[in-house]
Amino acid sequence: MVTNSIDAGVMADLFLAGAKNLERNKEWINDLNVFPVPDGDTGTNMTLTIMSAAKEVSALRGTGDIDMQSLCKAISSGSLRGARGNSGVILSQLFRGFTKGVKEYDHITIPVIAAAFDKAVETAYKAVMKPKEGTILTVAKGAAIKAKELADNGTEDMEDFLRQIIERAKDVLEQTPEMLPVLKQAGVVDSGGQGLVLVLQGIYDAFTGKETDFSLSEAETSPAGGRSAAVNVDAQADADIKFGYCTEFIIMLNKVFNIKTELDFKAYLESIGDSIVVVADDDVVKVHVHTNDPGLAIQRALKYGALSNMKIDNMRLEHQEKLFKMSQKAPEETKRKPAADQPRKEVGFIAVSVGDGINEIFKGLGVDYIIEGGQTMNPSTEDMLNAIDQINADSIFILPNNKNIILAANQAQSLVKDKKIIVIPTKTVPQGITAVINYVPDMTAEENAEVMCREIKCVSTGQVTYAVRDTSIDDKEIKQGDFMGIGDSGILTVGTAISEVTMNMIDEMMSDDMELISIYYGSDITDEDAESLRSRVEDKYSSCDIELQYGGQPIYYYIVSAE
Image 1 (cartoon, rainbow, N blue to C red):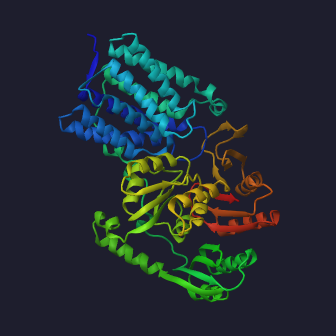
Image 2 (tube, rainbow, N blue to C red; image 1 turned 90 degrees about the horizontal axis):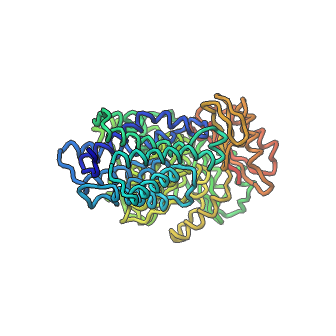
């Protein structure tokens, strides 16, 4: 018997089947990623996105009373809030557009589905500032074109309709290496497009009667095995505190504070502590340092002028108190106070960061809320919204600090109505640090956004990590276990020694107008190795200021910026 329509109950089952098929194959999708880096990859991001929606659909399905309006809301809202990574955000936008096209119908027919496919593609393309062909967008567009063609030709058999759409999607997917040279060189199809095909295949298999388990386990709907992918760093558990006093103050300068003076002052602070931030701005200098003797930092600073806004916190005592309070409270009581309980202010900052050293740098620069995440686990739109809720400010700047997180931040921005959310498109941690440093309280939020966006373009970033598989990319043969220096536009160098790869990467990053090189070393690098690298860089680039900071980031041995 020919079936030519689908009701809400069937559509819920089909959606869950598509989600589960993607979840079963997520590691295969991860392996299709062009860059062989140990990151939170496409398969993981798309799976966490669709499973966020699947959880909502499963709960709705459990009530036994599903209508198309409530189902569409569950799919759209669940995927939008759970979206993470560029591929996940695009997938959520496809769902958003599709549900807009079908939510007014009790039964959806082939013409309705075809129109909804078109709406899905339109919505997804609009969400991406610079759409690139050869990606999930192209695969979705190919499926939508085929759906319209079949509907216009009067196709009435839903099974045949779905089969032909999937065949077209697979055909387009096979063509993606011809559209993107980087895919062809690596010998893979687009991973996001493959993920979409798996969703469609799961839907088709369920529609044709293939046995499918529509129930969802807790593990399937929880990121990282039940852990939150992004957390407020203030709630982190035990840590080794090397220097006990967080010391902050402002120097009101009464003498010249030039580059040499600043470098001498920083060198002194490094001799007595870490997590150092020194920002000179006209006649004032903002200082942040962790040290075991705040008096030494204060005495040296007094040589340059009077001090104001002094703040010294005993981090060891605070840490012990925090652990004691956490042990005495239920988990839900350890959350921050709601934003409504905090004093209202004009501007707040949210930064995505990973690594205790980098986290401290951001906090020292005035960032209100740090979302723990980045390359290894992209925060979701929901994580962004939760962070926004915790800040009682009229305007809030979000610093994604990763190109794969910008779309999720933009999506959060579009969902907030009671605050002005400004996403600064920082693609790396050094860009994020530069953005905060260039914030000027006397300027409007719009003026600051313009300045920040301009200044981050002056920052060149390189990151050193290791390869998780053999591949060929950017005309470089890479073996599993090799170290790679990755720049803003691709892989700059490959080798078997971390220090040599880092030096070669810096060489590739440098240009004649560069004046400052900042090096953030990760959790797997010793202080001695980091100092050795600093010495090599100073010897080679003696005309540049060289800053070395402990970042504590995992996976990436060094993050280097040049500006």
